[in-house]
Amino acid sequence: MQIINPATEEIITSLEEDHSSTLQLKFDALNKAQALWANKTLQERMAVIAKFSDLLEAEIETLALVLTNEVGKPLQQSRNEINGARTRIKWMLSNAEKYLSDEVMVDEPGLKEIIKYEPLGVICNISAWNYPYLVGVNVFIPALLGGNAVMYKPSEYATLTGLQIEKLLKKAGIPDPVFQVAIGAKETGSALLEMNFDGYFFTGSYKTGKLIYEKVASKMVPCQLELGGKDPLYVADDVVDITTAAIGTADGAFYNNGQSCCAVERIYVHEKHYQDYLNAFVTEVKSWKSGLPTTDGTYIGPLTRKEQISVLENQVVDALNKGAKLLTGGKAIEGKGYYFEPTVLTDVTNDMLVMQEESFGPIIGIMKVKDDTEALMMMKDTDYGLTASVYTANRARAEKILSELDAGSGYWNCCDRVSAALPWSGRKYSGIGATLSHQGLRAFTKTKGYHLRG
Image 1: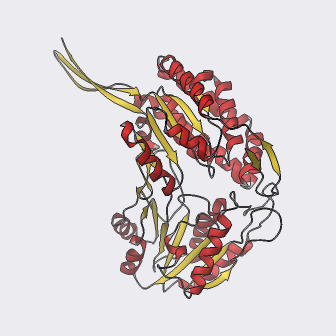
Image 2 (image 1 turned 45 degrees about the vertical axis):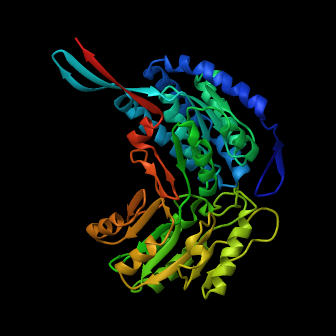
């Protein structure tokens, strides 16, 4: 399996992929080691995870460069991702004892009723390439804290980062058989689905998530899916500083080249502010530096996957054929690397691909609406339900609109953010189950009720 630098199209290295027999060896090792890991105290497991976080900090420059070289993320954004992962780990460590320890529900003379949180066992974590540290720690950190062993399959586009994660976890003190990396692409993932894991946790596209869900259903084990989104954002008529709103929402749409499940993908602007918003938005987009992700100041690097260029080109052609206007961008950048111009389309309608299908790239459609009712109708017009954002001076107004949207996260005067304290969950095509928060800590456990008399 060749690892290719998307900025230069040069081969970084080649790796031997796992096959059925090597995966079985790793699975057997996980099964043998899991009970020993689970028998360690929670405090002992927490100490190892804390050491892992320290190593992320100590080796951040090396880790960031590996990540940038294989996925094309600008170097500062790679550093930001690793630091963000450490922030999530800190929250989990601060709350693990509270939410993973025994809960006494009834304590009276002659009777005690207790909930115990036991590990699922050996879990399969099929992860993503766009934020391998962030979406990774959402799963394997609480899984390990809960006493599970983990088969971690990084995306084939972020395998080197997956191997760095494995190295540091074991350097921190995770016993060698407790965390195993499965190397490979589609065939490796398919082989994992045939094995008898005690839980499956996937981050990726709706299409693949649906396949996994159907494939493992008969196993009767937990299966959580963190999938994509077509996340809407509404700018209301009472926004005071429209320039600041435009700058912030442009970042929400284009950060990490738009390759984020919770990136802003559809924008609806009240007609009062429409033109001023467009002017500020396009000015901000044109100010960004595109180029090599290892160059200081680069905001837009290459796409990670070459195949995504044709998806974006198709969305642009479809929109223009249906009457949209192109304000900037619209095509791939010639030369080496998988570069695509930051693209802004206006006069869009909700029947255009750019407003219906996940883009996962540097492209946005912006539509004018006359009031909250029209905005809400347009925001609801999607099969996805990950996040939704409202910019308004009135919190009650924002909460009313957000309450009517079937999305896992709602934002008021912000967008494209994730907090370890809140559950990360999707509705409809955006997934099932939750990571992060106390729900995410407990997602990797199974409950047992103890009825104690005497």
